[in-house]
Amino acid sequence: MSILADSVSGYLGHASWIRRMFEAGGQLKARFGAENVYDFSLGNPDLPAPAAVARGLRAFAEHAEEPFAFGYMPNGGYPWAREKLAAHLSAEQGVRLTADDVLLSCGAAGGLNAFLRAVLNPGEEMISFAPYFVEYGFYVANHGGSFKAVMSKKDTFAPDLIALEEALTEKTRVVLINSPHNPTGVIYSRKDLIALANLLENKSQEYGRPIWLVADEPYRFLAYDGAEVPSVLPLYPYAAVISSFSKNMSLPGERVGYVALSPRLQEKAELMAGLTLANRILGFVNPPVVGQHLMAAALGSQVDLSIYAARRAAMGEVLKNAGYEFQMPAGAFYFFPKAPGGDDVAFVNALLEERVLAVPGSGFGCPGYFRLAFCVEERVIRNAADGFARARAACN
Ligand code: PLP
Image (cartoon, rainbow, N blue to C red; front, top):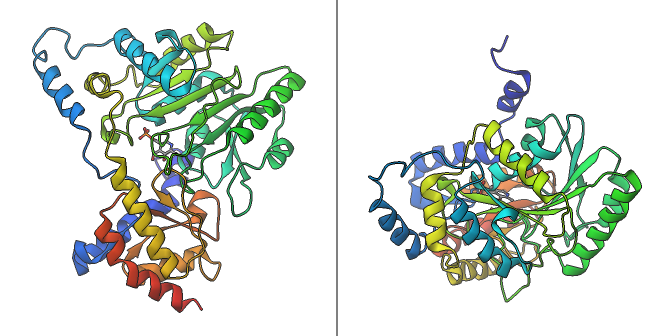
């Protein structure tokens, strides 16, 4: 008998694909040397943080011996940090935000959990489009809710709004979208977002309770060829953007993120009070001290995007030359090609034979595809070319 809660021992018994690849990668690296293993399994940004982050850290260190330098603060973050963030997001999201519209959180993950804690009753559901970031299901379950996935449109991975409409019920409290998207790299169009907002507006009226639209946006900064990433905040009063500085400033371990609300929301003060309480009672208490100083010092700067763009081009070339079927990602740092032969798990195992690490689409609720993260040096992508070609050819 397990000493653990059933849910947790169940999760442990079904290790995630990313975890399994991590372990398989460790064994291959020990056997063949790290330089002979091509690891595309992890979305852990490898670029150094922008220079303004180090400058902010040094400036903070000057004050680190003062009383309360590391003290508790309001549960939603330092008021001065919220003000700075609101000014930055006003320009980015095209709406006028004040410090009262934003809450600082422990990463986007902490923001998502605070939001769900604040709005979800046990038994209610959150819907997202498959493929999806696998942690969403855990986050909803943390708060007694259920997670429902609706498949995106075939091949393009645009949101399928007809399928969503069929899936909505009186129990649906949140629809969560992620654009630019992990794992497909798709950016949702303005037209789709307007149609989505209209659908949720109508359904909220029909059910007599709002359905929240949450946009999970940690990859907003990473859009290629000048692609536009439209904001949901001007489109719908019950919209929230949840994001972080994990990817654009390469600060994932520092755990600083935020929730930003639509200025059109009438019950803003009530929701903000709920989010602030949720930050506290979930045990986050407040966002990290140092992370807020780094964020404030570096707002507006980001990692060198031209490096990600060059890797994207290199990966596109390698996959095309080897005969894979895929669409170029419009944003984020992932490719999501079709698995040759159709069986994504079998194909990822075939890649493993070539010392190439990928994650099967099944791990994102979308069998038949596999994910490649290109936050690795360009030479790793190029050196993997022969392995990609051999694995592809073996499936003919
Ligand atoms: N949402 C998506 C789609 C992600 O890919 C990630 C991290 O990889 C997160 C949320 C979590 O981001 P954070 O590290 O800021 O909590």
